[in-house]
Length: 219
Figure 1 (cartoon, rainbow, N blue to C red):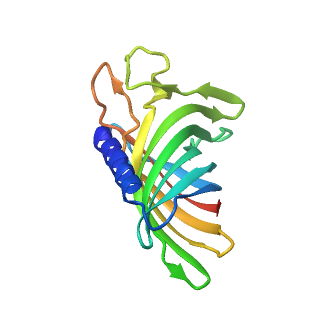
Figure 2: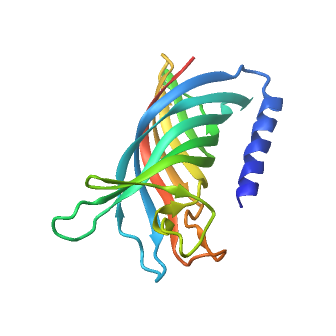
Figure 3: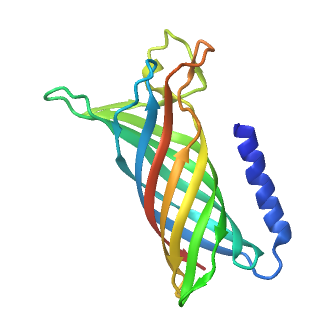
């Protein structure tokens, strides 16, 4: 699945670069707030009861013209994800999982003129590579270990997850005539972040989900 997503992303970008003719490629910057969660189920099939955690994203993108009003928009973001888990125990702090990613979204963007500016509607895949993370409860910090497989006797088995993430994006927004834009986006992770244990897949599932608000500017 990861290979298919990568090939699709590369193919659409190559096609877009070859197809641009009527307009020039533009570049932009974007930053915003994430409202992230980790959804899924445990080994017994019970849904995870995690809560939304606030994070942020910042990065750059390009808009490569295809045909009038349609663009391919590849980007490069630094984004923070994770979730908050309530222990349900008195005098016990919530557990916060914080993971930082370098993310590559590649969206198909529809951008027609609307009033004095332009409407923004888009969707596409993203690929994320975790570059760091911590599990925090009160004053205690535990570093997250990234691996695709872990031994059952590894003392870090409960703070291990996969490094690679992928999924889909949806976005809607508006770009002013001044090139300043405002955007709402949603993200659905498709990659199970659970590692294998002794080479075997677990029945439990963890996937990133979230939405956000961002501000951008095109040069």
